[in-house]
Every structure is written in structure tokens, then in C-alpha cells.
Amino acid sequence: MAQAPAPKPSAPSATATSARPATSASAQGGEAMNGAQSLIRSLEYAGVTDIFGLPGGAILPAYDPLMDSTQLRHILVRHEQGAGHAAQGYAHATGRPGVCIATSGPGATNLVTPIADANMDSIPMVAITGQVAAANIGTDAFQEADIVGITQPITKHNMLVTDPAEIPRAIAEAFYIATHGRPGPVLVDVTKSAMQAMTEFNWPGKIELPGFNSGAKPHSKTVQEAARLLATARKPVLYVGGGVIRSGAAEGLRKLADLSGAAVVTTLMARGALPDSHPQNLGMPGMHGTVPAVAALQHADLVVALGTRFDDRVTGNLDSFAPLATIVHADIDPAEIGKNRHADVPIVGDLKEVFADLIPALAEEHIKHGLPDLEGWWKQLDEWRTTFPLGYATPDDGLGSPQHVIQRLGEISGPESIFVAGVGQHQMWASQFIKYERPNSWINSGGLGTMGFSVPAAMGAKVGAPDRTVWSIDGDGCFQMTNQELVTCALNEIPIKVAIINNSSLGMVRQWQTLFYNQRYSNTDLNTGHGTKRIPDFVKLADAMGCVGLRCESDADVDATIKRAMEINDQPVVVDFTVSRDAMVWPMVAVGTSNDEIQYAKGIAPKWDRED
Image (cartoon, rainbow, N blue to C red; front, side, top):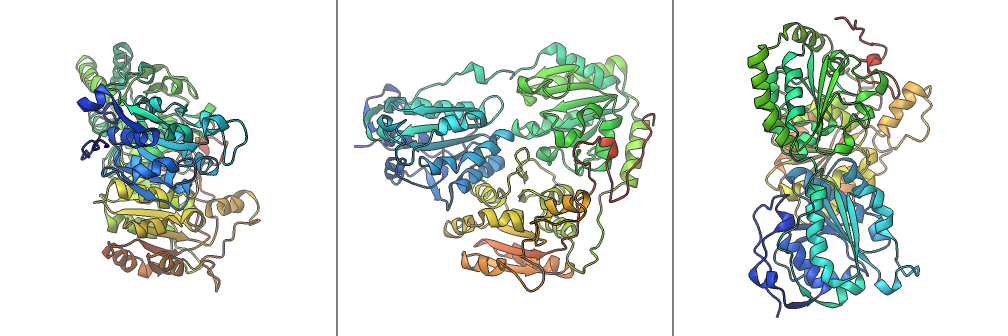
């Protein structure tokens, strides 16, 4: 007779999931079961409550005991890529590792894109795949693929399990690795033969893998030096990356910002780490960042980089990035420090620990040196904010303005909502024109830039945060890649809301064709929203998938349409916002150029003297 599963936890923490206390029976071992039962039991002991997946031959043994679990909610997706992105969205929204499951061969390879995406953006995720029987590995058996080899470069760790006795420890280690140190995806590939063989279930009482804990506590000398520099700088900038959100360190960031008086810029992955309403927040830096944020970095005498990796989309031409600045770089991953930009003061540590040490150290330096004189610096920053605010022009073609749609979406839905973007122009507008007041309210594919991310990730976010409004802000190109997961949402009562910013184009590619390819629009017309053609008709498609479909074709109707969508909370809603295809994302730093060459709008480039 099977032992009852462990009680369902209300909110398992990311760090606790890897070492859930075992019951006395399981700790002593001795309960007989097959490997598939052991796999499901292990997930229960790891604290998992929600799984996104799709069954198939090699993973099928696990789906039988899964049916009996009272703790695990399995959400049957329509494509394994949707399972992976849903697990990412879940992790983004909750801070806990997302879990996805797939079969061997094409089921496993369909997880490659979300695994790579999670790896680039440091998302804690555990992917479980079935594998052909151990005896068949290497024979080109039906649906065989070396998913461990395929994903080795894009996982934090992966493992192949052929012995059923190793399943509990493999699962426990997977959750430990995914959540300790720099978060990331872990893949556990389990052979069908291991799932079918009998074993004894033994949940490890404690997992300790020191190699995955490196850098948790920063060195006091580097922290003290960073504090001294921050106390004496005249033009300091806190350059904040997604690591602040991953570490749950937003409160520490705010305290440091208040104490230091420094300007703050929040990258694409860090939107919401510091409220946009905070007076020191200059917005997003980089290719489509605000002019004040870009200019602040270019003129800074000190840049304190926190949980960020000096990505090319932020730095532009790296040789000309922040040319006058001393660099303090704090990150939990020592491999990131000095990788792209030399760090004058390297701090390896969890950002919660960094802030806990840096804030009192800075207060001590203020006693030694007095408060820094930042009046001239803020006078210049405020002048840039006044002269170069974010804005947009009304389209000449009479169609809706995408920026207006997104701005009103943020204002009407409110700061407690979660906004999940696809990739492209709509992603940049959503990062610019929605005000983010809290962490984990902005979810997007940053490093990999995965089109099709939004709908399944929004689904996962809604599962993880069912009491929050979740908007998928998607483009008509992205939406056509993964919209089938709306069927999953409808059948599983996951009422996300989707705003399709429909410019009938692959918008960002079209923008580059406009600017750099003499308006030669090669293969970017999608025929989804302009003229008489609507292929597909998104409203009809939404209705066919069990959702409510709405359409808005002018700025005058935007507010009423959003409010109508907000009133529907018992099924998914899809709103087709027909907008101008000629709208472009500004400001912009062209690829390979210096941030000094930022264009505020087409033909308008701010000029500044480095001595200002």
C-alpha cells in the first residue's frame, strides 16, 4: 500500500524545496515502489505544487502515479515549448522554481528554447524528461535524443538517471542547484527502464553542494572600498540588473538608493526593482533606454553595477561605455565579474548580503567624509529628464498609437498587475510606458529574446499568482507562435488577458528595414490587421479557443476596451488592438555604436559635453 504524500505546503520557498524535511518513514527508507512512483513522490517532497507538461511514450510511466497525487496539479499544455515558458513565468512571478515535464526525443527537444531562455535570464527551473530504456541508449531507438548532451551548454546542470534508486537524490539536487547561487535551469533525464524498475524510496534528509553556493557572503574589504567610493563620488550611478530581483533584494536596493543619493538605472530585467515613482530612478538604460539613463552612465564617475552582466544591449560599443567611471561590480556569479568590463572593485556575493553589509559601511563612510555634494549632478540629470522625456507622435495613418494603448493598459490595470511581454517593439514600449512599482510585476524574455514567450509565460504567472491580474502584451508575430496555449488556459480556468499590439508586421524587423535597409520591407508583412485582410482574425480565433475576443481600432476606444477586458475574470480575454505599422521605438542606440550616439527620435540626437 502506497504511503500518503507529504502535506501540500502553502508556499514553498525556493531554498527550502531542495531539502524538504523527510518523514521518519521515508528517512529510514524501506518503502517499495517503482521508479515512476518514486519520481512523483520526490516532486511532492521537493515542495512542488504545479507542473506543466505533455505525456508521451518514454515519460508515460510517470503519468500513472501522477494521476493519484493530491498535491501535484498537472497542467496539460498543447506544446512542450509552452510547458517550458509557463514554468519560467511561474518562477518569475513567485520566485520559486518552475517545473515542466516532457517525453523523450521531440518532446525533450521542444524544451530546448525555454531552457536556453531560462539560462540566459537566470530563472530557476527544473525540466524533467523521459528517456528511452537504458539498454536502448545509443541505438537510435524510436524517439531517442541525447537531451543531456543537447542541453549541456544551456543548463546550469543536467543529469541522466538510469538507476531508480538515484531518482530522489537527483530530484533533490536539481532543486538545490536551480535555486542556490545564481539561479538557473536544471534538466533531469530519466530512462523508462528506471521508471519501470522496482526500488525503495529514500528521500535525502539534507543536500549540501558547496560548489553551487559560491559567493553568498561578500568580502568585507571590497564592500568597504565600494562604500568609500560611493561616499566620495560626485556623479554616482547604481546600474541595477535582474539579479536584484532574483535575490529578492529590492528592499536593500531602495535603502542604498536613499542613503547614497545616487542616480539609479534599472535594466530590462530589473524593471520594478526600484519603483518608477522613486525620484532617483532615471528609467531603463541601453539600446531603447531613456536619454537620462544612458547619459548618466556615460557621464558617471562611479558606476556600481548590481546583479547585471554589462550586456551589449545596455553598453552599446563596450569600449566607449561609461568612459570616465570607476566600476564596482557586485554579482553572485564570479564568472560575470570582469567578463565584459573590468571591475575596479569586484564584489562576489548574494545581493541581499551585499546590501546588508554595504549600507552600514556607507553610513560609516558618510561620518568620515560627510555627505557627498551631488547638487550639480542632479541639476544636470533633471535637465536631461526635462529636455528628453519619453514620448511619442500620433500616427499619420489614423490608426491607433501602440504607445498609447500600452500606457493606458498600465494605468487602468494598475501597479499590482503582472505584465508579460513577448519580444519586439511591443516589449520595448511595455518596458518604457508602463510604470512598475514592485518587483516580479514585469516578465519578459531578455537575454535570448524569444518570440512566443508571452502567452505561455503569462499562463504560468497566473498559476503562480492567481489573485493578480496578468496581462500578456504580445505582438501579432509573437502571438501566432504559441497562442494555442490559450486553449490550455480556457480548459484549466486560467483567466489571463492578452493585448495583441497588432501592427500587421514583424514590427522591430520592419523598424530596422526602415532605418537601415532603405525601406525594403522583405517578408515582414503579416496581413493580420490592416485593410480588408485579417488572416487570422484574432477575435474569431480567440472565440474558437474558448476565450472572449475583443477588437479596438482607434485611440478613442482604448479605455473602454481595456475596462471591458478587466471586467471579464472567468475566462481568458484576447484584445486585438489595431495600431499603426509606422510607429517606431525611440530612443535608440544602433547596434555597434556608442551610447553617445543615442537618437532621441529620428534625426534628433542629444549632444553633450563630457565636461558638463
